[in-house]
Length: 254
Image 1 (tube, helix red, strand yellow):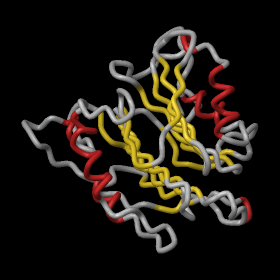
Image 2 (cartoon, helix red, strand yellow; image 1 turned 60 degrees about the vertical axis):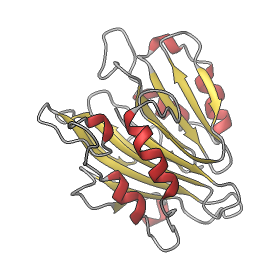
Image 3 (spheres, rainbow, N blue to C red; image 1 turned 90 degrees about the horizontal axis):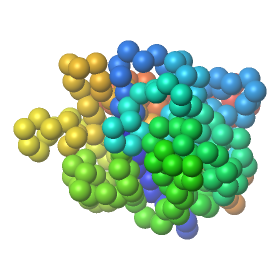
Image 4 (cartoon, one colour; image 1 turned 90 degrees about the vertical axis):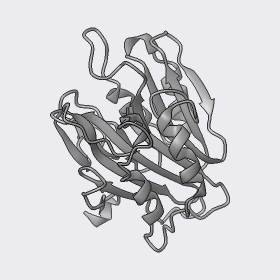
């Protein structure tokens, strides 16, 4: 199960912060975030080489979208579309509201179950797909929230029950100073509370060909700062041993 943390603080210079660990089969090929799609020149995202989509993307209009599998739905299934397509579909739109409207018009039964997060510097949404034709859409309130393979802030899930309070108590990242240290420490946590239950960790390491394969930190600037670039820091490996690198988001910086 992947994990995503989202902090909404509308009056801040950086009103949207996201942290996410991607948990996946370790032999599934992928590439770090870049402009991988010639027909989507304004989209930066990680490339899933198997299906051609992505697990997280940010577009030049400052819309961010990320996909998580729901419980029991890891991997592709014959006859179902790749859930990574949904992230690219969301990134085709100029704001989060328009992206959600487009996703709502799709046939949810064409995909295995999913949690899709779509946000910009004004709005944020959680879309729940349960293999029914109609997906469910929920606005994400202000404050800090967490989602894995179940519902938003489901503290009955071991990981959310343990780490949601820690993220809420942690020092918020200082984007201007480039200081994400408190969140980075939590994302890299490998310790268990009980008998080696991986669901209680943020960073999964196993001998079963499955684990945490990358980590993401994203910050979107406020709407009144159109010349300020979004920030994306990416660890191309386990965050407990892989440094975060800055992802180039500005075309002028390339």
